[in-house]
Amino acid sequence: MFKNFRSVEKCAYGRGSFDKLGEIIDVKRTKDAPNMVFLVDDYFKGKELEKRIPLQKGDMIEFIYAGGEEPKTSQIDELRDRIQATLGTPAGLVGIGGGSLMDITKATSLMLTNEGSSTKYQGLNLIQKSGVYHVGVPTISGTGAEVSMTAVLTGPEKKLGLKCDWTVFDQIVLDPELTESVPRNHWFYTGMDCYIHCIESMTGHLKNTFSEAYGYKSLDLCRDIFLGENSGQTPENDEKLMVASYMGGLSLTYSEVGVCHALSYGLSYVFGTRHGIANCICFNQLEEYYPEGVTEFKEMVKYHKIDIPVNLSNDWTDDEIERMIDTTLNLHHMWNHALGTDWKNIITREKVRELYMRM
Ligand code: NAD
Ligand code: ZN
Image 1 (cartoon, protein in one colour):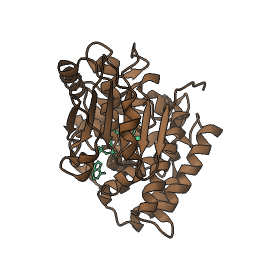
Image 2: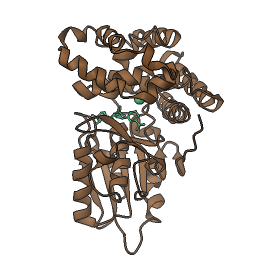
Image 3: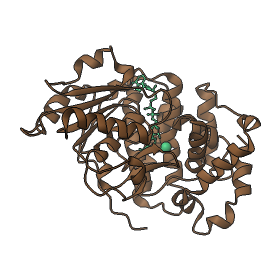
């Protein structure tokens, strides 16, 4: 399938590169729009990193809680209104945090220039105008949100990204030092998001040499990090996972995610299960589609003594299961990639129900 996508324009990588953020963004301040907005994961409030944020007079800083539900359309609309009321159109936005903050920053950048509610733009190429300059500084590695062309939001009707060329960051600053403090379980779940991105992008109808080249390298790095001799959450592996995340994101940009993500969106939409763990819950039951990937995933789970929840379906109501099925069957692009254009004959409501009941 023909794709023609925009890449992140500028990328700074390396331990300590966060300290260059000020000089990177200052050239984007203009006379008419001198101020930046920093959107920062509230984990960093009061931490040493807060003092290193290159704030200038008149800049706005918002600490955002990312430990609860995933980013919502209403949250973006409110944030956009607040920024506009304070600064009008700022010189730019800088997002500092995990995948949630990456998506919040990308979406808010677009909503500062596109009118109305962000719910109108959930989908492919629905955005009408380029957003404001936006910079991503990831503090968790794995989602690939720092490089992807989508800002995933949960709205009243669906969990779906604002996806277009303008979503992509103008600049990213990849400083592996910032990920040191990620809690172990979360490090594993988000790392597995990266692993699963590669397995899915490389196993399906849209795979191609471009997506495979990034995918193979990213998988090599994941294997080192999660199964290698020096496996574990070490400074060296923080560096590797940051690059693996980036490459995993590029692998799926030129391909697509598959069965695991399609099912996991259902889980997140109905129960608010966070993306990384939702993927682990689903992937754990998907030997039928990804036999080698799931076997290796289970080795990683065992090696790191991580608990992946099972038997959840015992507590699900029929209504909840029906809503998950509706959500997942709406993700045509994922099923199309995973199973081919006649996926509707293969993946019936009954089949999806059976897959969910395994969880
Ligand atoms: P997250 O941003 O949701 O953060 C999870 C938790 O980690 C939060 O409690 C946060 O406060 C904390 N945290 C962040 N950085 C930390 C650090 N350095 N030390 C300690 N704690 C830290 O986590 P995530 O897994 O990176 O992102 C998940 C989100 O990413 C979901 O909303 C999902 O939809 C989205 N996502 C987007 C894409 C995309 O392409 N746009 C791809 C995959 C996932
Ligand atoms: Zn993912």
